[in-house]
Length: 80
Image: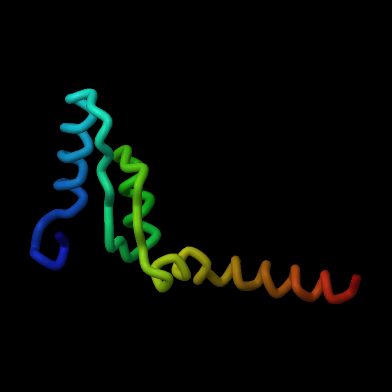
């Protein structure tokens, strides 16, 4: 949706509200999500089903603090 110039989050929010208001069993599936921020935004509006690429998933762990913690853990476990 973003690539088509739409406000994807607003569109998905409207879909989620419609499903909730109808009280039906279908669930909104957000597909082709690209960033951790998009995942958080979707969860905030109630979307429970999200797909993302391996590259998008890797972005969750692309953080200096996380990388430092992994290195520290690896070093500590090597000393055991």
